[in-house]
Length: 104
Image (cartoon, rainbow, N blue to C red; front, side):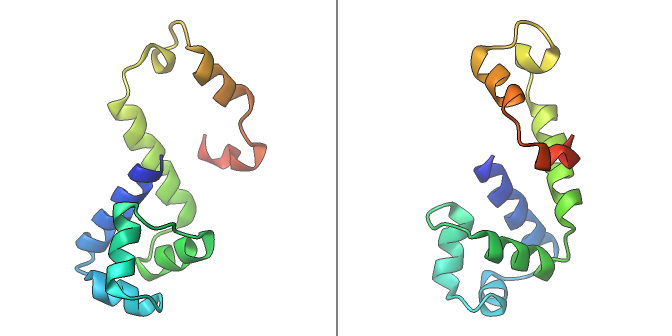
């Protein structure tokens, strides 16, 4: 999921014609550190994530709904087709956080 989040953030930045330098400045980071975040080589805190969504003018709920939609389009596993869900997928469904139900 994290690589998909980072890829979506990067694509949104490019769509808005923002440079890494511009975003980094807004976040009070260096360009090289921001580049590491986009590549997944540095952690993105929740606080920075929300700031980043704000800079990119992205709604948090819409962002994750779109991300979920994209991930299901690519997935053709039996679990998502409703046939023989593997054990690890069952655990995710059973143990899902009710606070994240808005993503469904």
